[in-house]
Each structure stands twice: as structure tokens, then as C-alpha cells.
Image (cartoon, rainbow, N blue to C red; front, side):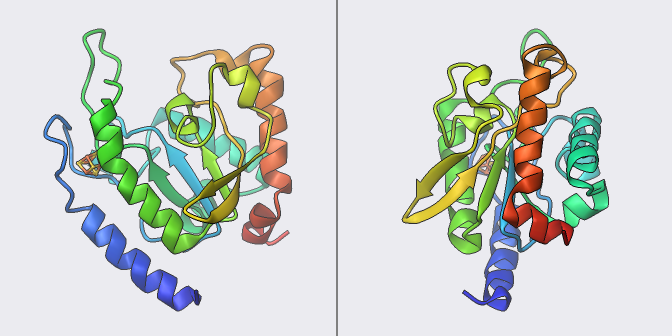
Length: 207
Ligand code: SF4
């Protein structure tokens, strides 16, 4: 499909997504990173309370860590990452807080509701690489009993007849130390090197 057609379809898709109100328990309207036509998609879990206000995904502390990883390993700063990678998420709205003041994990019906948006994005973009960030996002593509089994590896996945690579990352939130201590630290580095070497990322970074 020509890039102009993808751009047209994606613009229309994002405009519709922003109007979505399917899930009554969600505490915000949808957050989008914009209609970025790309061969690479990054899939987050769900926005926190700051993202709907700042109107972009990974806008707060977890984002700072995520963008530092990309800068360090792929040589791409935050502005470049945001303007060249399509940002999606398992759920696009802030789910609200849980009883222990963390963010509520989206319910299965909310994940189901939102999956059609991601399915459509994959159908429009036909990406070469998908980077799911955090267990909930990884689970949408590969079985993820333990992060140790999937971080640092590349998977070939098929959706509706389209094949693409999946390289999972752990969630960069400060809430979990997994990526800062062994073996997570080493596996994270391996995953980031795999991402940096992927042809679709090299194209984006002009390497
Ligand atoms: S979480 Fe997804 S499906 Fe649910 S209201 Fe938000 S955008 Fe719509």
C-alpha cells in the first residue's frame, strides 16, 4: 500500500480512536501518539494519570527511562522516537487507580474492546517490527510466564496473514526493579541491542 494511502487511513483511524468511549470504567479519554506512518510500532500497556493531561503516551517518569534507553542504544532522542515510531497501547485510556494506589490493570473486556484498534493499526501499517513494553503488552503477542523467558529474544508473529518481528521490553516504570538488577539488566541490554540492529530501526535512524 502506498505511504500516502497509509497516511490517509491512519489519520482517519486516529481521529475515530480519539472519539472512542466503549469502556465506562475508564477514567480518561483515549491518548494517542499521533498518526505516525512507520514500519515500527511500540505498544504500551495503558496511560497513567499524566498522559491524558499532557496528551501523549509515555509522557512522565516511565517515558524518561524508555527514551533514555532508545537514546543510549539506538542513537535516537525522544523527539526522533516520537516522530518516527507509531505508539499504540493495550488500552488507550487511563484505567484509574487500584485500592493500593497503583494504576488499575485493565479488565479483560476492556482489553478486548481496545484490541480492535491495535488490529486495525497493524492492518494499515503492516509493520516490520513491534516492540511491546511491559508484561500486559507482551502477552498480546507471545506467551509471557516469566520476563526472563522473553526479554532479550526476537519472535516471529503473524496477525491476520501479516508476519512481523516482536522484540519485547520490560516496563520502564520505577515500580519494578526487574530491569535494574540481574538477570533483567543484562537481558534488557540484549533486547535493546536487538532493537538497534533491526533493519526497520536502522531505516528510521538513518543508519
Ligand atoms: S480503552 Fe480503548 S476501547 Fe476502551 S474506551 Fe478507551 S480507546 Fe475505547
